[in-house]
Image (cartoon, rainbow, N blue to C red; front, side, top):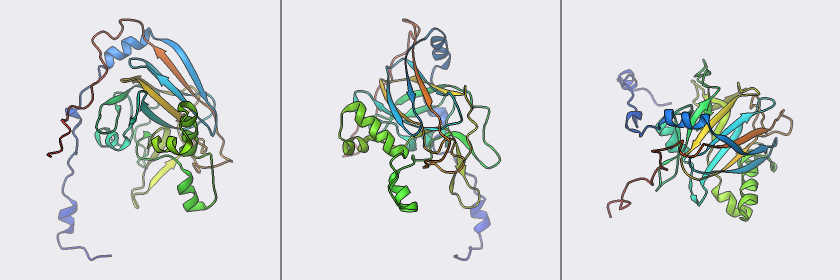
Length: 281
């Protein structure tokens, strides 16, 4: 290790600055969303089976809820613009804007050049968890999804039930795309119900048993027309490993709710980002 300079302590003591102050973000009208949710009617549901994934559609101005319905289970969520798969959830920018874990009032933002809200979290029954003594919290945007490539790198062999693979199969089945084309659209996720953080000593990404229980849910308002894909992770509650045929796994339920006509008066789907796109050329 390099010898520390004489002013090392002074350099470490410099106070941090928030990169993207939240005060500059356009705020969702949560009161309007919550009022619209009161009269909303369920129009469809999709049950995501253990170690599998499924797609679902949510029209702009509707709500969708992801629920734990049996035992503790985490899921990986991908979102796309229904009409343009190139516009998809951008976990890195969402993390930069909101932090490592999401909860009520925070949003899932889309990729460049769109960079607009795709979905706003309107309810979270695990918001009580906060940040624990290990630095862990729930609903992270720091993990990438378990995948067969990393599994092969670390353990060898081919495992086909990683979230990356089951999301790929679900998207291929929904869109009719060949697997290799569908795979290119599968992206870094919102880890729904997963409890994660970074170790204080080595800075490594960790997971621990999810606090989710049957009846818990995370609910969203769709800001644009959405195609979603949700996995029921082969790690179950991720208390031991997240690519496994032996972990106890349970289904997850996705429900879509449509508000009454006129309930969202004054709301409109957000426009594409206002940057001119010139890049100084």
